[in-house]
Length: 100
Image 1 (cartoon, one colour):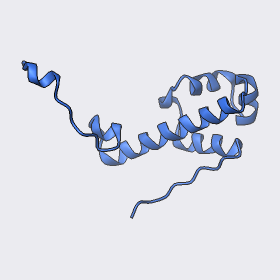
Image 2 (spheres, one colour; image 1 turned 120 degrees about the horizontal axis):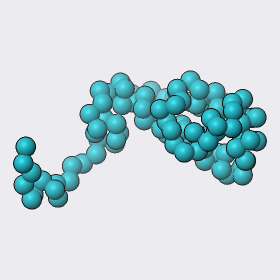
Image 3 (spheres, rainbow, N blue to C red; image 1 turned 180 degrees about the horizontal axis):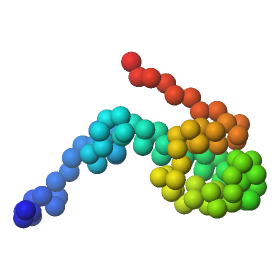
């Protein structure tokens, strides 16, 4: 399909969930967004505490290479359960609230 010059500059409003905007079904988009957000918060906590990857690996109970994956944003390598566990081990228990 050929794009016209106007298509390149078209802007669409976000739904608020980039994964939904990319075409994932609603349930999967919500899980992906939760994982990405929680991963970013865990990584931020490690950075704010100025923990080395080795120190973080001891606290989180994983290898240093797993912490490296976390710091590099390899979200596909971490389940939501694992990220919730990491948050708890950092003393920042995760909480999910359902929208009404």
